[in-house]
Amino acid sequence: MGMSVTISAANSQDAEQIFRLQYLCFQREAELYGNYHIDPLVQTLDSIRAELSRDCVLVARLGDEVVGMVRGHTDEGGVGRIAKLGVHPRMQGHGLGTRLLRAMEGELVARGETARFQLHSGHRSEGGLRLYKRAGYAAVGDSTGEDGVRMIVLEKEAAGRDTDYVVSA
Image (cartoon, rainbow, N blue to C red):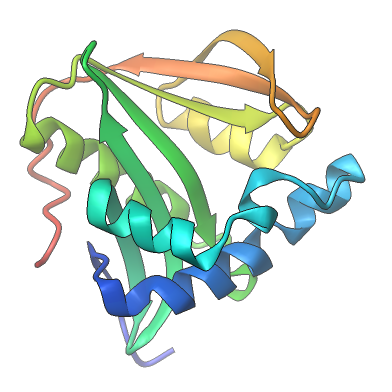
């Protein structure tokens, strides 16, 4: 490719690229379920802007282009909630999803009292479930989202500050 992919904290100028990338990344999920009303596809640009000001949002960049994203926050109970991990289809299969996931875990641990991580994936999303299991997550239950899709809830314990995944400013 000639350029390396970097992972950094998203800023307010990234909102539109995140919005477009999220729509692109979650088309396959919508197709799997025959449901184009899943949360990532109906989320508004204003809602993404709000997440950027409230949550930890990391992006993967190839030059100036945002090619991956993930969101997270730690709740009052010490659970690091990770969501909306997505990688541009042309960049998939090269470990970028794993890098983004580990970077988010490291950020949440560095920010405070994260005791464990939790995320969810659609029950038919074999690639996502495989990625999460390889990263040490185990299924702990399931739930049905507002959009009617059955989600597998996965968790893993936080192991402490992960210095291998320092996020650049």
